[in-house]
Length: 215
Image (tube, rainbow, N blue to C red; front, side, top):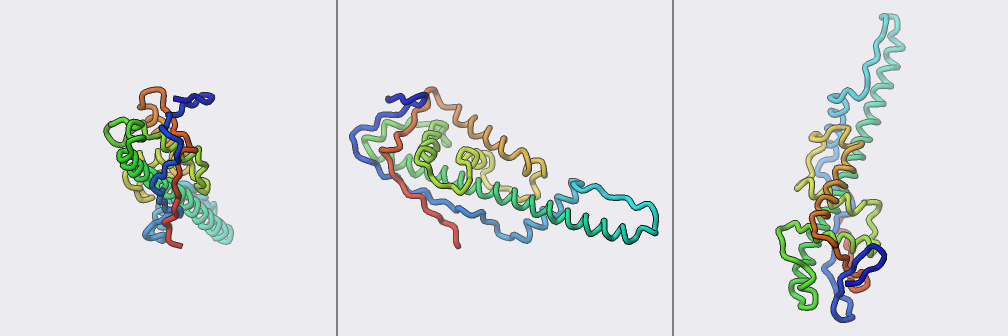
């Protein structure tokens, strides 16, 4: 085992570069009905009372009332669009996380069929916490994610087997809570491995990243 700084890397026998299965990712968030998502966002704005109702003192203030109503409608629309944007980011992270876990499964099969790699993986119940080494490998290989945080993506997939519809979330979760929840899930999962967690040397492995989204 080789130590570089505070990182420990497993020793891979030989000198050749090992080809791993491709990472197949839907890089653009995919939902079946965007109009339904927008409708759920609008309902959430109403249910959470995100915009206080303005009071009008007298019937003579009708013009002012109409102006206030138009402003409230605009703010409702802006908030609903913002919620949809946050939800689409959540879906994008979940899709990456789902693809990464499937890629790790494929890598396990590859490791198991190669004598020089077989001893590097321990047998455990899926999802193996020790497989966070593969997430670190993605980071070490500087995989382009378009702004998706890999650890958050895996944490999101560990939290949700399937992405819930937007109506299942609160505005607080979408705006503030989803990132720390996903990050905590990932670090709890990764921390279940026996120390030290050994990294895979990035120069000894190669794989392609394939965009599976339909343009």
